[in-house]
Amino acid sequence: MSNPVTLPLWMFLLILVFAAITFASHFLFPSVRWFFRRRMERAVKQLNTRLQRPIEPFRLLRRYDLIQRLIYDPEVTRAVVDHARETGMREDVAFEQARRYAREIVPSFSAFAYFGWGVRGARFLSRALYRVRLGHHDPRELAGIDPEATVIFVMNHRSNMDYVLVTHLAADRSALSYAVGEWAQVWPLSQLFRSMGAYFIRRKSRDAVYRKVLRQYVGQATRGGVTQAIFPEGGLSLDGALAKPKLGLLSYIVEGLDLEARDVVFVPVGLNYDRVLEDKVLIGAAEAGGRRFNAGIGKVTRAILRQIWLRLRGKYHRFGYAAVSFGAPVSLRGHPDLVANPEVLAEHLMAQVGQVIPVLPVPLVAHLLLENDLDRAGLEQAFLAALDRLHSSHVHLPRADKSYAVEVGLRALTERDLVAKQGEIYRVNKASRKFVEFYANSIRHLF
Image (cartoon, rainbow, N blue to C red; front, side):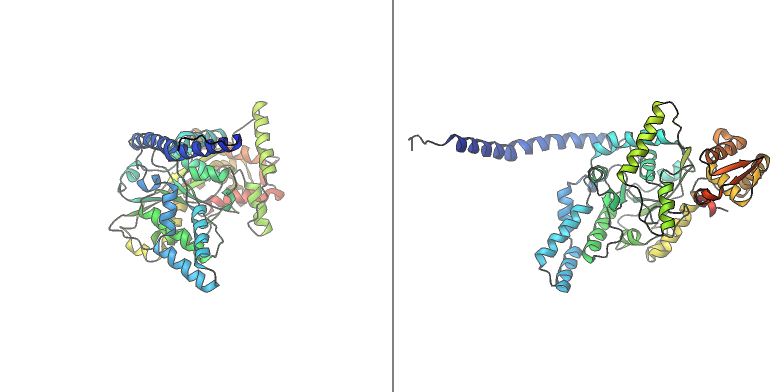
């Protein structure tokens, strides 16, 4: 037993490497993970004292545990067995398919990522691009929501800036979990969104197993009290107007609810912009008759570099105003009739969203010039008349000055050659009429 053993040097080094890996995986890594997890728990506990709605325990579960809970859900298991029987696929293969779907959907929320650089980045980007304004909101209504209720912000979808803007303005209330589409499933965006608590959805998938996995995840998150933000329209508005709501996520949320255990409260959120960053892309997609967006990485990069160049030359201007309004919360306990009919619920919520969409200078001036060609005095008179018709809506007047609001809207439209001045008369350029309609459509329903 005490005789020496001779080994080649390469084998000795290999044994050392395996020994180091074993020590690290069994002793070092668990200790390091425990140390950082303890620090994270203390940080989250301190953070929760500053939030109106503390971060839910469900969201703090390890991603691996969430995936395991999801794929072993009885409903998912039943869907896997049915799918295997219908397609002739082996059950273990179908189960692995469900596991891949779960890995694709489930986020890996990081409180540090969200409230550290995430919220700071959203605040910086929002203020760098827009003059951000908070429109209609009643802090007492939002603070009066049952602390144990699941809160879901229901929003219109104008721009990809919607995510950034609402994250910035809701940062003191809670961490929001967004449903994001296939466009975000590109590295490194996918990792970024996952760490911010977003979950991925395939909007057009008809795979029964996938739909069941997604349905069960949304149900688990809702029952776990996760604060969510959804866009019932299902995608960006191509013409600027509110679109009819789709029932997918809403039906998943209300399915199998136990309102005695936990209420679900929807908060309508209306967003509007003086300028939508992707307006050319969206209008182009509408003209092409589909949702294929001509916005490759090269085009996006050139647009960013152009704005940086303008900033370096001192010629950069922000893209006008961006505003967000919060409507009155809708409790499902208070409206049990809506639970049984997701279609009625969707129509009701979108009507509430439409009523709180802020009216900004550019959309209002665009609406007025589409109705008539006007000189400056006539435009100001029409603006005042429109304010009387919009008395129940939130209208943002820069500097609380109606004449200056007309100037702001008119300047933004003329600088982009959407509106031309001929003599003393302002009229919409024929070649740019679709752009003017795009902005006017955002408030058309209010008239």
